[in-house]
Structure formats: structure tokens, C-alpha cells
Image (cartoon, rainbow, N blue to C red; front, side, top):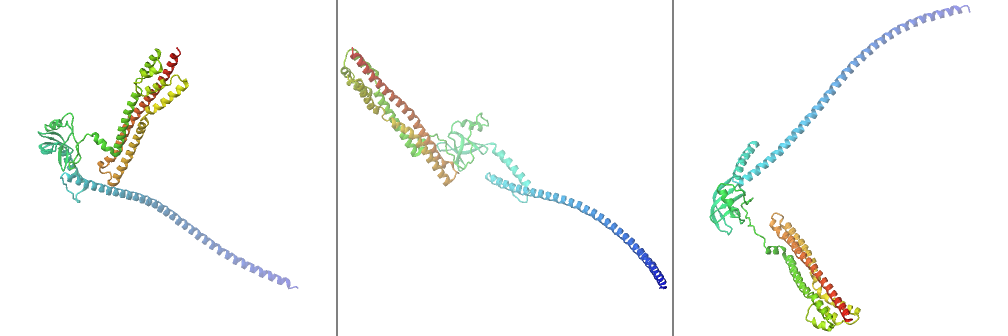
Length: 440
């Protein structure tokens, strides 16, 4: 056991020795690791600095590229706007060139009618060609707006040809002066001219030939001297009748019939209502003198007409009961009403039917007009004049017939009612006279 301390001391010495060795090894390793750490930290700092430097350079480059991109976008938009403007100008130039070509073609066609030709070279600039056309137009305008005098031949109204002086007012009017006739000229077809049939232009023709300008210029203006212009013709009654067609003749026939019936009815009413006061006065005088109804009947037997017949019927029945006499008078008046109302209803029917026939003619004329338009178009107005004339003339005829017949028919009806009232009054007056003087 005595060696235990020694062993223990040896063990402690060895442990102390190993501890120093470990401490030294640890210290060396620590120093090495610390040096490595410092080296790594330096390298990390260096790498971080390098990265920050590269990042800053990248950001600056990116900003520069972005700025350049914005500039390029702006330049692109401006370039696109310029391209659009150029394309638009190109389109307008193309359209203008097409319009100018059309103008040139139309000008060439127009000038050709006057025997004028101009240079039409596609290699020549458009401005030069247009300037050439404008020069020709100005010369033609001066020529057409001037008054020229020349010898020429024209036709008179009766169709005979004469030679004389012709005064040209541009290209729109002419005057002719000759020993047999003078005045404004109208196209006769094929470039020939004829004396217009409207009087009063001879003074103008002679004044222009003498180089004077009259206060009033009577002129006939034409558009084309190749087409014959018909003479102005005053429309006659026959022209109106023909314009109305068959329906127009029917309306006028009904109007004539209605007028005849009006005259006949007026004659009937004149005979029916004549001498009413004279008959009543004659009967009254007989009753005053003490005469009988038979005496009065004998006195007025020569009178004719509806009123006379009613009074005669009244005289024949005097002496009977008054109510019975009034019934007989009423019956006699009803019988005479048929005579007094003769033709009255027919006249009013004609007055009502005439406008309807006119409307029928209007519809018929418009149908004919549209048929012509469908077949021939609207190029020639003369083709449409027949249907339009029928449409308007029949309406006019219908109103011409209806208005007078309606007015006269109502007047005659009022006249007939007045005669009926006078008949009734005369009959009652005679009854009252008889009762008055028969009691004395």
C-alpha cells in the first residue's frame, strides 16, 4: 500500500504532463484556426466588397439600359407617327392624283365638244397640265361669255328658212335679225335654229346687233343646240279635256246632266210657286163679296202649278170639318212634294259622285305614271306628263262639277221648301177666310 502514493504521484505527473501537452496543442490549433478565421474574414470582406462593386456597376448599367430603352421607345413611337403621316400623305396624294386624273379626263371631254385639244402627256407634271387646262378654260370662258355677230340661216315660225344676221350670246342664247322676222332663236335640232314664237324679243335682237344693251333683255336660254325645242303652246279647252282621259269626259258628262237637271227643276219650281199671292187675293175678294167656294174655284180655274192645285183642292172641300179639311190639304201637299222634289236627290248624288270620280282619275293617273317609270325610268319628263295630267285634271273636273251642283242643289231645295210653306200658308189662309165670312 506504501507504493500507492508513488503511483498516484506518477499518475498525477503523467496527467499533468499530458495536460500541458494538450494545452499546447490546443493553443497551437486555436492560433491556427484564428489565423484561418481572420484569413476567411478578409476574403469574405474582399468578396463582399467585390460583389457590392459589381452590383453597383450592374445597377448603373441597368439604369443606363432602361434609359436607353425609354429613348428607343420614344424614337419608335415618333418613327411610327412619321410613318403614319407619310402613309396618310401618300394616300391623299394618291386620291388627289385620281381626282386630278378625273378632272383632266372630264376637261378633255368637255373641250372636245368645242373642238379644243390640249396636250395630254403622262410624262408632263400634273401642275403643268392643270395650268394648261386653266389657260384653255379662261380662253373658252372669254369666248363663250362674249357677244359675237355672224351671218347665218334660221327658220321662221311658219317653217320657212331665211338668211340674216345672227347674234350669239356666248353659248347659251342666240338672236336672229332678217327682213322677214327678228327675235330670239331656239334650237331646231341638229345645230339649226328657229325664231321663238314669243313676241317682244325683236327689239332686243336689233339692239344687240347694233351694239347696244337694252334695258330689258328678252332672251331664250338653251342648254343643247342639237335637240329641237317645241314651241310654247297655249293650252286650249280641248287639251284639258284630252288630259282628263275617259274619266274626265265622264265627270263632265255628269256635270252637264246635273246642270240640265238644275235648269229643269228651276223651271218646275218657277211654275209651281207662281202667282201664290195673286190667287190668295182673288179668293179673298170673292169671299168678301159674299161669293161661294164654287165661285172662287171658277175664278181661279185658269191658274196652273202646284200651289194652284192645292188651293183648288182646299176650295172643293170647304164646308167640311176643319180637321178633315186640313188632312186633305196635307195629303194634297204630300202629292205635290213629289213634283217639287223632282231631280233634287239626283242632283245631290251627282255633286257627291263627281269628286269621287276625280279621285278615281287621280289614282288611275298615278298608276299610269308609275307604270311608265317602271318601264322607261324618269329620264324623259314628257313620258310622265300624260299620267300626271290625268291625275290632276280629273280632280279639277270633279271639283268644278261638284261645287256648283252642291250650291245650286241646296238653293233649289230651299226654294222648294219655301214653296211648300207658301202652299200650306195659302191653304190655311183660305180656310180661315171661309170660316170668317161664312158666319157673317
